Length: 64
Image (cartoon, rainbow, N blue to C red; front, side):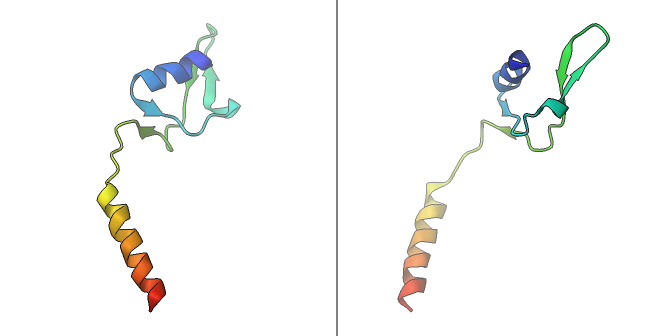
């Protein structure tokens, strides 16, 4: 099971819904991981300017 999660990470994704129900076993005993609905990539970029503007707006909002 750990190797399945490691493979997903090596492809640049985070599964975010790891539970026994999402591991499937075939007749030969191989394990597959399923349910990638909550999956997200490592390549998410966050924009610091958004948070700076948000904090500035919040500050002025509470002064009024």
